[in-house]
Image 1 (tube, helix red, strand yellow):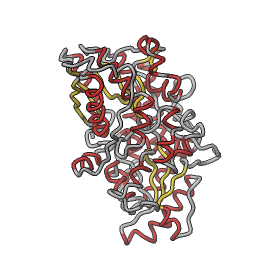
Image 2 (image 1 turned 30 degrees about the vertical axis):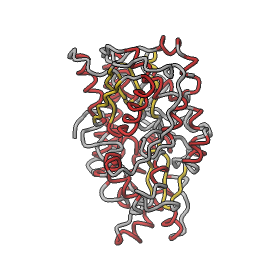
Image 3 (image 1 turned 60 degrees about the horizontal axis):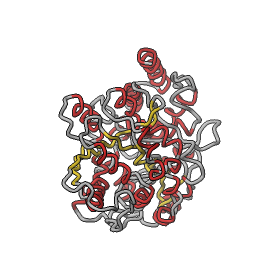
Image 4 (image 1 turned 60 degrees about the vertical axis):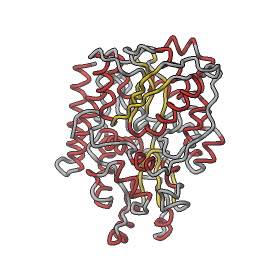
Length: 446
């Protein structure tokens, strides 16, 4: 598996490609209003290039069509796998090719992209256009974690990703189970259902454990927050030398025997269909799963599922979410169309547009603005999910490391978690080795 941030095998929502091909994804017709752009074809004859991750291809197509209608500018959309977007953008700038104007960046890469001179500092542009952008509407933790590096901002949030615990209510009712509030209850639920139903190809959980940072680290982060742990201490050093970090991994390992075979090979592509087809009773997953689950075109569990906050563990009794993935839009430093690129970013991340994308099945977009989170459209589209996010949960979520060397930390921890899940190392040894690796990386690069 590639050591890059996401690994080539993974496509966060590559299921969308088949849905698009089948014509099964709805298209929201109304165009988001923008007084700054609605003056006509101000960019007629201009062309810009948007580099976007494959899971955002539906929204990329929509942005291109809408922006051209508003401004006359043609938008060429290039969709690439997660693991390639940062490398492709960096090579584009450093080689002098300067093909791309806007990139869809993973928030933990912002520091590296900024330091490498790949993305533009837009702090002054935000200040100039703050009445239009309304930055105070962004969920503050997301706004800072996704855009701020060394006191300057390098983009605007586009997709605020976090997980909730989804479960199959029909299977739970069959065996007298309740939504788990602790990871011990989650593991016990998985055991009961797997022992009774595995002969029918049904398992108690889909555990996303593939050796790809955004997969296995998201699964681990959910348990780390559940046990009350953190990635880093307030001084920026590794917090993996904690009991909570070890117990979180022990809980993950305890779920593996009762999970969809096999966790080390379970990515987004395997976990999502298993849950939607009623073959997995539990899954901790991105919040837009609620839209998928209620779509009869791709779901066999319509009105048969439930959702809860991420469970707790150990002595911790306070649920906490984690920012598992999460993306922003940035202008590339090599763009020859920076003004056009900035107007596209403002449209794509605006209040009205964000609200539309939140209510579009297959968009892959989760709340990053207060207005979108609290909107009637989102509440109507995700009536079970919305209340679980609209209580300060996102403001208090655990962010992954975002320093320039963050990708090195992610790769080191991914390696150790995979070894533990494979049975090669104990939880204690894997976390101890991860802590040592993190300490060395931080001391060397910090």
